[in-house]
Length: 119
Image 1 (cartoon, rainbow, N blue to C red):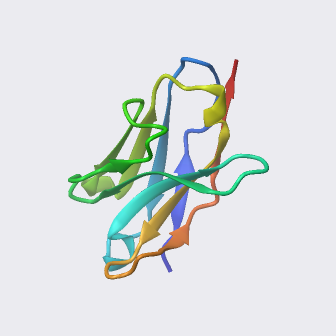
Image 2 (spheres, rainbow, N blue to C red):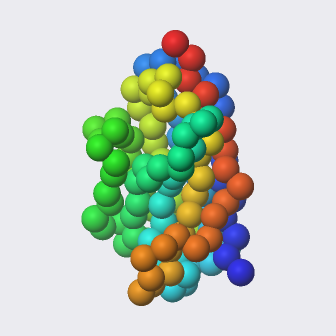
Image 3 (cartoon, rainbow, N blue to C red):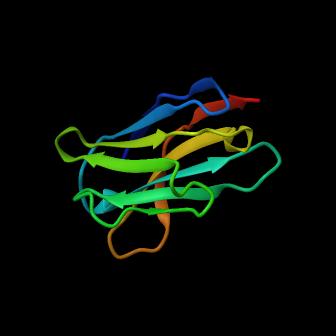
């Protein structure tokens, strides 16, 4: 069973930065792609960014392009999400998730870490 543990959330003023981390219990076909999602109160969960362990071809939601950067640390089984120029609308519970090779769904999820951006 894959376990994903997020950290790094907190309260920050608009324009500030935060760095989220997600440690995976394994690096396997079940963590072929690592992603970040977020869910704001009263809204559906939405995709933020994703990357493979090799670090190639990261991709982002349009709403965060140019502000957020996803990266992977292969040796530490850790994925980071560097969030810059934060806006109040980025406030949400941020989840780390993994996708198994050959599937289209993210099947493993962390508990989430809260990010709150004040105006």
